[in-house]
Amino acid sequence: MNHIDGNALAGQLSDLFAFDLTSAIGRCVTCGTSGMIGAAMVYVASPGTVARCPHCDAVLATIVETDDRIWLSLAGVTAIEVAKQA
Amino acid sequence: MSDALPPAAARTAWRVGTVVEARPETSSARRLVIDVPDWPGNDAGQHLDVRLTAPDGYQAQRSYSIASSGSGTRIELAVDELPHGEVSPFLVEDVMVGDRLELHGPLGGYFVWMPQAVTHDPRPVQLIAGGSGVVPFLAMVRAHADAGDPTPFRLLYAVREPGDVFYRQELTQLAANGLQLDYVYSRTVPHGWPVPAGRITKDALAGFAIPASDRPRVYICGSTGFVELIAGWLIELGHAAGDIRTERFGGQ
Image 1 (cartoon, helix red, strand yellow):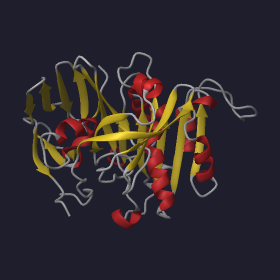
Image 2 (image 1 turned 120 degrees about the vertical axis):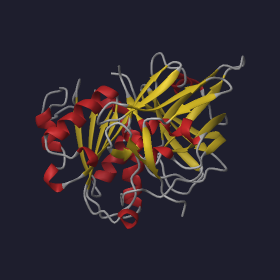
Image 3 (image 1 turned 90 degrees about the vertical axis):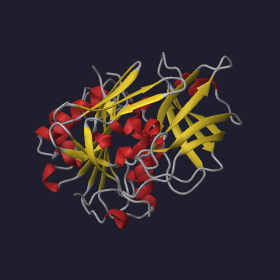
Image 4 (image 1 turned 180 degrees about the vertical axis):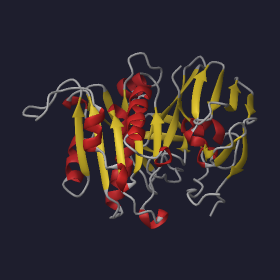
């Protein structure tokens, strides 16, 4: 199946976080590789979105959205590093 | 852990903008200038989401790269119409000057370019566009020229035919002022073009891209198939995966 980049999640994630998660660095729980969330492989399929590690293909995050709810799992990503606002 | 984190982007929000300019870009694309009074400015390469709401409440939302950057409240988009799209046919065929649009942005700090004065990174930059994937690069080459930035910039622009080129006149001007600009035509070439039309090859890419030995920072934007092909070849040509940033817009 075709995928896009983690960068494409910026809009959806900005509803949930006070910082831009796509330019944050996260570590994959499965393989330990660190990288920007924007570089994740993102698969968009109704009803949800899955972000996978570009190195080991493990699931980093899932997002499911309905009209009035958002379910977010970041179970596959740890040690998130974010630049402080200047 | 890393010294490459960009500054956190300005807080994003849903905003209402008014279309102040709309003109054809190609036979299937349109350039829109939108005035957004509370726009906080944006970095070169960021995108926004456009949300349309039908009278019955049905909503459709799509992401578009922004062709402009800086602190102004006027933003520019160039939208290519997808034949069965939900949002692009409206933006290309129907929206008129004076219409209001719901916009979410600016979005994304990953696929952005910052001047050397900010990054202190003197390495050259290679931009590679497939079709309408050139839009975020317009923001980058404009910002690069406006800042008088000393970073060497090269743009490889792959299109089907000459009439599909976005911003041709402006790119020609930028190329006369330091931007290294290369076109690859897959279906039809301009009159007198030295090579026949054809899909880009690994050898052609090697000839048009800044060599891996110069450690360029590479940005690729296009359809998923195009980005996969180019990124794969660049790795084979010796570029480090960490030096390549991609923006796929789906499709083949």
